[in-house]
Image (cartoon, rainbow, N blue to C red; front, side):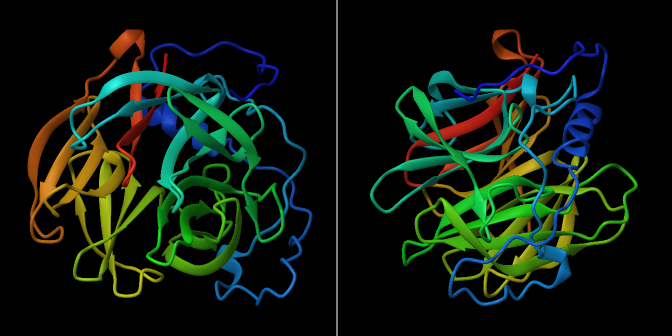
Length: 317
């Protein structure tokens, strides 16, 4: 489990879930930029322009936010159908916004915001435990400024792609923001390959999730407060918005065992929805994780690890 000295101050009481999420994200990684990190040898300039340009942040340190990820815990469970969970167990402390991927050799990696360090980290899931491996390396730096909300998936050739929110800072900032996509051969070291979706100034989009359908097209879901914005792509790199759902926020897209598209959202716990037409229409399936189990008031950030039978989410008191 990740370690660090807790920030000063206690947790506020009576704060809404949406306010807690906004506060946690707002204070992540708003560290002084030190210029663009050097690219890996032989790598081409990422075709992402300024929106997904990678710059190096400051020293690792706890996120100084009493409602932030230092007080969050990542939980892992087993599942065979993506809805019924067993063996639920906390696996990472001071950790938030988890997402998992199964590598070609069967290894399951978990990407998460490390509240004790202030950057995106990677852990290896081993049964009822997770072993931190270190920070995400992006375009040659392991302290990528303003990178949050990781979402990973495996490509047919074994490469790992990662969608994330880039440029997140304090509320009201005019810094460019976007959903970006990076790629890796080992799941540890990534190179930016595309700007998937640009974000207008002041638009509070967060938490991307990406999945490929059987027909080869791609779908993305992005959180907009307590709503979910949907987007579509033919190449899996550049997406266009198609609509907004009011079912909840902080979404996760997955493929159900029968091939249907599944959407998990945070709404009084974690709830799943189902679409048999690629996201044009949806039917509610039911509650996957009820609100507040084991004394936890916040239950959110779902992730179904494709091909691994594992389900991740975060809790907070």
